[in-house]
Length: 186
Image 1 (cartoon, rainbow, N blue to C red):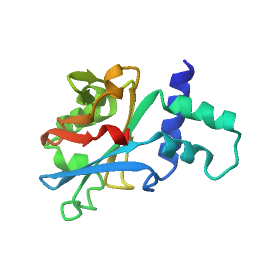
Image 2 (cartoon, rainbow, N blue to C red):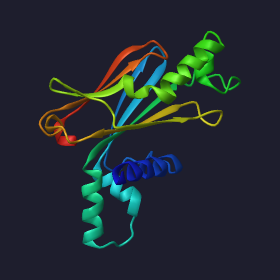
Image 3 (cartoon, helix red, strand yellow):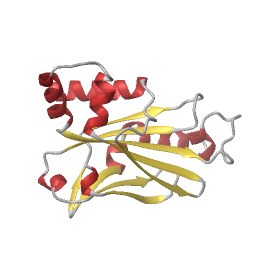
C-alpha cells in the first residue's frame, strides 16, 4: 500500500512540475504520419533530484529515496502532432483525429483507462505491464497527451537485458512503436 501511495505522489509531482529538464533523463523520439511520440526514461537520480532539489538531506533520507525509486522503472510517453498539423482552433488534437463523437470517446477511453494494455516493456522474451499509469490530458492548454508509466523492477529480466518500451497506437492507428533503451541507461 505504501508503494502505491508513494508512486501516486510521484505522478502528482510530475504533473505539477515541468519535467523537460534533461538531467539524467533518456529520451527517444519517433515521428509517424506527422504524429510525434517521445518516450523518456526517468532515472533514479533524476527522480531523487526532482524530489529534494538542491536541499541538504541526510544520507539516510537519500538512501530511503533511492531504495524506493529503485523498485520501479518510470517512463513518460508524450504524444503530440507536428506544429504544421496542429489546428489551434480545435484545441483538442484527439478530437480533430476522431471521425465522430463515438470514436472520440473510444480514443479517450483507451488513453485514460486502458493505456496499461497498450504500453508495456519487453526485456528478452518477457513482457511486463505497468503497475501504475496515468494519462495527463493537455485539454486546451497544450496539444499533447502524456502517459506516465511505472513498471515493477521485481522481474529478474529487467536487471539482465536491454529494455524496449512498446506502445501499440490504437488511437491514431500508427501501429506498434518501439523505444529501445540500453541496459546501461537503466
